[in-house]
Structure formats: structure tokens, C-alpha cells
Length: 402
Image (cartoon, rainbow, N blue to C red; front, side):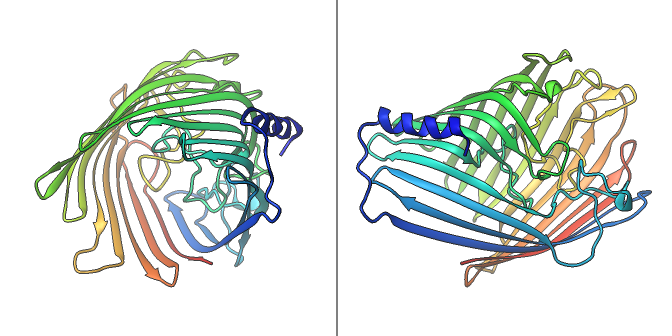
């Protein structure tokens, strides 16, 4: 934690009144060990990436007073076997051109913050390095699938003045990306802000309005202002539930961004949940009118397919942007208690132009409930048309919490 954040923590203590530290602060500890073997093959690539990695995360929380606490989270990622794979933004001649798997080796303090919690006023303040997830992670995420989670140096504030209203605000001064400190984009300083206002209606859904104002010190092309509104519906209808999501955001270039950006994001999703299984149909668009005038999400985890080929908003000749139509289903496997599945089928096309990008099929199984152990398998197959090449990405993993 840097000096500025420590000073802010002291100020926070002063703002919320005098602090009487417990004579014997209570401590809480948690650990998680996760092993994953990931295979990623793209036609015409010079090699196939195979990553066999283990992640150890150890956390400790000190309850200093009835309201104040300190939290630290350390994570280490180690390659278990001599598999070769390319890590984004890390140059290695041996794996040049290989498909990328964003699981670099290394160790770091993932989180270290001071927290204030007041359940009476439903208020929470965190100052220091922390994981931040804004709504569904479309604009700010921790990228929990990757072995090295993304975190931020900054301050966040949350308050619920009533059961129906929740207000979130955050200041982000530095991002620590999943690619690690050796990657050219692994760390980035910024002077960014976000907010989220949510209003809940029982048995109807949640209406939100949000803003993400990014001001990067050196990654100037990522400096943007994004404002949006969404509705997440979850309505009972007899023995089933109706599910719906509507999301719209507008984005413009900000601060010293040399590019002109004026684009939109849309998401429409609808479906039902029957006997614990959800069935959804959706459509989302990341607009673009050129290779530089396009909607971007530099702090998000990958959406639109587990191959992660659409991490960035694509361009191909005079075709730009992304439209993704999809069907999905998720829930507990019928006749089981601990086996869960998820499936997606995507059709991809550009927002402007006539290209046909391709399609993708994703499927996963997870078994939960054996002595804090989770077993999983994930499969993704991209069928190329005009964009990229055919690709297959699959993983097996086991996680144990102790």
C-alpha cells in the first residue's frame, strides 16, 4: 500500500470518529489451491499452447474494531510441468505465434486494504489494493477464471440508504492485470473513477445506472468515458421465473486520448428458469466504425466465448465491431445433487461491413461438494468463417479450499 493510500486510511478513521483498537484483534484465515491444465490450439499457429499451472492463494483478515478491519491476500502461480505456452504481452522467441494463455508464473500481494463496515447504515469503505467487480464484469472485473486475478490500487465506497437502493463509487489509481508484472501491459497507472446506482423492486428486478471514467497515464488510447443504464429482471411466474436483461452504454474518448471514439454497447437477453435450469437467448453489440473508433473495455474479463478470441473488439478489412447472438443454458444436471453444467452457442458478425466472423460452442461441467473440493472441465470450439482460424480450447481443473 503506498503512502497516499495509508494517509487516506488515517483520514477515513478520523472521518468516522475515534477508533478504539481491540486489545486482542481476532484473526481469520483462508487458503485455496487450484490446479489447471489448459490446452489451446488454433489452426495455422506454429504450435499448440499447453499450460499446467497451480495457484495458491492465502488470505488473512484482522478485525481491529467492531467496524474496522485489515485484509491481505497473497497469490502465487507456478508452472508444474515443462509445457510451453505464450503469455500475452510477454516476449518469448520459443513460443512466438503460439495461442495465448494469460497465466504467467509469479507471486504478488493481490489485495491489501483497510476496511470500514457499518451494518447499521449499510456502509462499506475499502482503501488499498483490492479486487473490484462492477456488475457483471463487462467494464471492470477481477477476471476470476485466470490464475492471477486482476486487482486495483484505490478506494471504494458502498452505501445502501434503504433496502431498495444501493450506491457504489470507486477511485482507481493503478491496475494490476492478469498478465503479471513482466508483461508490457501488466501494470498501468491511472486517475479513474466509477459509480453505480441500483434500485431494486421485489419480484421484478434491478434498475441500474453506471459510469466508468478511465484516465490512463500512459495507455492514452484506453482513456474513455462510458455511461450506461441496465435492467436485470427476475420475475416469478407460477412454477418458473422469467429472466431478462437490458443494457445500453455510450462511450466517448476522454482526457488525452488521441483517438476519436463515439460508439455504443447494447445487450438484450431473455429467458426462463424452470426446475433450477435457466434457458436464455441473447444478443449484444460492441459498435465500431473503424479500427480505432470502436467501443473498448480495457478493464474487463473476456466475454462472448471461452476461446477468448473476442477479448478485443475486432476489425477485418472494412468490417468492424462485433454482434454476438447466442443461446445458453445453465443449472444442475437433472438427477444429481452436485453436478452443474453450462452451455453456450454463439453466432458472430461485424457491426459494420459484410464479413461473417464465425461461431462458437462452449460447454462446462463442475462437480461441487466433496470436502471443499471443486472438479471441473471446460470446452470451447470456435468455427471460423472470415475471421481468425478454427480453434479449440479446453481445460480440466481442481480446486481445494482450506
